[in-house]
Length: 314
Image (cartoon, rainbow, N blue to C red; front, side, top):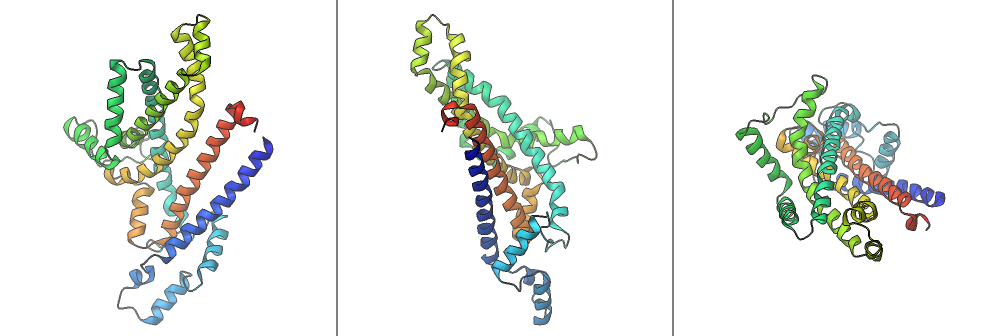
């Protein structure tokens, strides 16, 4: 077990290094020159060359990547081309907002999807199951950005439960800060709720067909006792793996929803950085998202291995 964890941990760092190299390479070869955007068409060749040297763009790709990795290990991601300030200072406050949105979205997903999935499986084939299943299909068929627009129209404009576009910073009022994130988090979490609830239902129904369930019934166990003590416990283990995918999907979905709800997170900064060819900002944010996804999947796999004796023994 310990050897496996060490191998996985080494593989984690190798994967992160390869991902950062691929992302760095892709974003430095795509069309668009940040120097031209900064200086304009009227700049002289000497001015362009001076700025290119200042930004480190006069070096080859591999040299620039090694400098970036060396700086990243000490949390120095360079300076933003557009804002001319350190990238870490630019993104830190926005990372807190995006992380808060992600944590709240995941909390909503867990609180809603588990009861829905369990109820749907427990009342399999009955009216409640059909109602939940149809709701899941509806939720999965609507794109996240449209859900955001619909929530703004229905809950913001029609029922006036919140003010669309209003955002209160956590330094001003912590309670209002979380309130301003709740409805964007709801839009982010709906697809995750539907996917996880559907997976939970399928996992539970798959366990119902196992031999140990028939054995428990033959020993006189009640349906409720067998369901909650045996079936549900065995059905939970595969859900952890799928939950890692949901968390990664939440990170991607929050970038879009931040635009819809005007949330000042990394999503708006990322899109603005791509438009202005602010490569230090864009590369740092994309690498951050990739690293977070890799780490989450590593942690999820570790949890599954620790809780499943069949895998732990391998």
